[in-house]
Image (cartoon, rainbow, N blue to C red; front, side, top):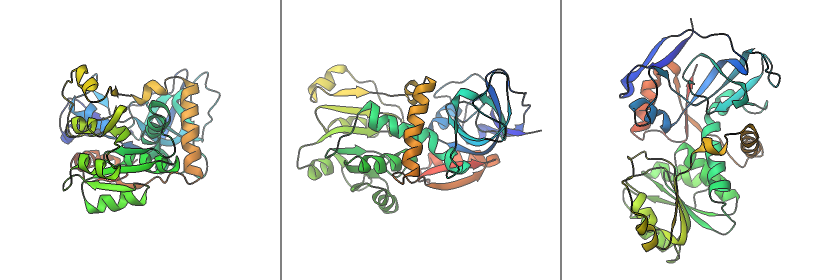
Length: 323
């Protein structure tokens, strides 16, 4: 029987149980996918530890890539043997799975399943953040927190290609060098430097039109101090913990700021939206605008170790589980 990572009760990495599972034939509008690689993202941690509650038991993971093994009734756009990748179909931590066909994106020959599994969620997140949530313009200066992470590296590269100057926060010299090599013009070591003071220095006191913050509690309030009047605070994660409630008057006092908490799957809810976003991402990878950095690989059975390393901030770029 195929195996998968199952969570019976929320908890730490030890809650990820490697076990045999039954996989049914695909139903109407579904495909059965033999997975080659699965992407690991911080949202998986929130599902595992109960921060985002899930019906129990469940199989974790939102993105992966592999080969279509069977198609269900009504599926005409995909064929057996076709390579596909996806983001948003829960249940990815598995060797074999059934998933909705309308969430699958065909992979070009030039992109491996490993790259496909590493790029869909983080890459489409970057596309949405830079082009839809706040449309970054040439000549603007922006701030990206966690600039050496998977989404952070993509944000740096893509923003640089759009003509922006990129400031990024990182925790070490090694991560600073990595972020710089991916388009971050001004890496800030937040462990040694005050990032607000550095933003003011770099911009000559002009501050920023937008901040992209996936860190949360540790950076949120001070990020507001980096924004110009009517600037936009984009909060899209909380790796350091949940942001404390904020009174709306604070946004007014700090310059009539805008605050948004975007969710990728709202922006790719329809098939047309998904195809448009994914096409832009695939084109950016194929033309060299984006490099997909798969820096960490673990056997699928070792998902707990991957989560441990992710939470300890020992990872950079993208992490995949190999089925």
